[in-house]
Amino acid sequence: MAKLYISGIECHAFHGCLKEERIIGQKFSVDVIFDVDLKEAILTDDLRKTIDYVAVKDIVLREMKIPSNLIENVCGKILKSLHSQFPNTKDIIVKVIKFNPPVNGVVKQTAIELSKNDLSII
Image 1 (tube, rainbow, N blue to C red):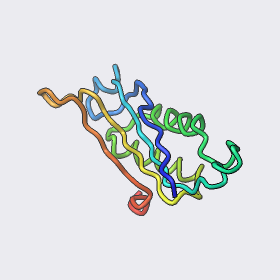
Image 2 (cartoon, rainbow, N blue to C red):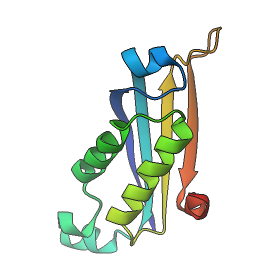
Image 3 (tube, rainbow, N blue to C red):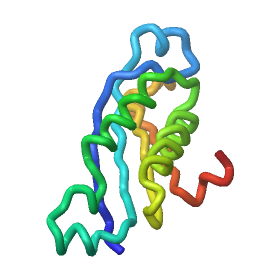
């Protein structure tokens, strides 16, 4: 098995519990790691035998457009969508990073990370 990393998918989204977060939004970043067999892709040089980066980015951005109160919720939705699109992976790890969360103090970012093992709770 190989690890395929797609990191730093950036977007402006409207997640959060505060009214202001839903109005002005903020910067988010999403990282995805696939644990997947890439032997055929390595041997054939065929895009259909690996994870299509564009499809991953499109799924992430589609799910990020739907406002959620919690980044835990949006992370779970991204994970479920990726699992549906790429069911033959051994594991998928999704990390959603929220920059400058409104916590009445200086916090650079918060993040949630979920894996396919967490799908049973989703």
